[in-house]
Length: 289
Image 1 (cartoon, rainbow, N blue to C red):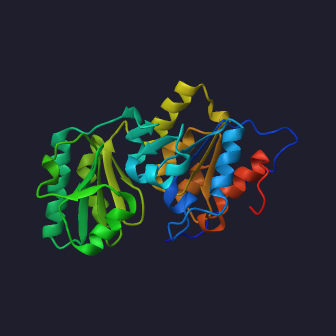
Image 2: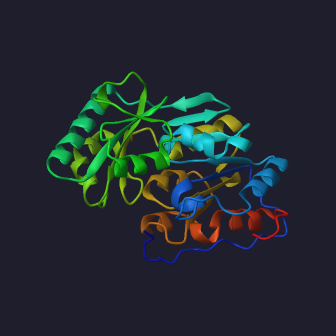
């Protein structure tokens, strides 16, 4: 659900000189996709125009790599996928970087989730591995929420004992994650990241694993500067990523802290804000956006 709008700086008008952008990075849910999880009209044409200009487009999401790869299957060649909130980065099927959790930490987070469930909290845990996601709760309402972001998932008896490298543990709360589940994970915040990544989701990762760290590594490897990077986000798991780009945009309706942190404000995800901003600032020849 969108937050009350907080005024922020809008995107500047393009100058006579072309804006030198080499990398466009966008969050997915609440940012690129509309509230019905649909890709915006004109996306594939915009991606083609960016590729023609030598501009790399990179989705950066809390979703798993398999989910992102499926969404962009027809245009995935050469694309960098910043998955699992930056804990797993892949290009052309090859891992560029990852930041796995210690198995003991995974076990303790899963145990916390089980205690919350026993106390009557309507929530479930998703253990996010490189190969698949693993869940213990098997009812259809929960699995429907999991399937939105994790196309590869398995129901297992013990999600803390799977044979996979775990890069994130996500907890879905049918109520408010920020007010409900997140406080129960406060003990992990001293040593790990506990980030609310959506209205119903909270993620636990290594302190060094976030979208911003993944983006900065990518910039170094490609020789791209923050001034040549355009970033879009809407929620708290996007903050570090916004810090890594001079062309940082919060979506209209984003979390107030995201609006404060970003340099500019883009139209909302339901108004095709990402593509409208990219097309206008880069002067792409795309009609109807």
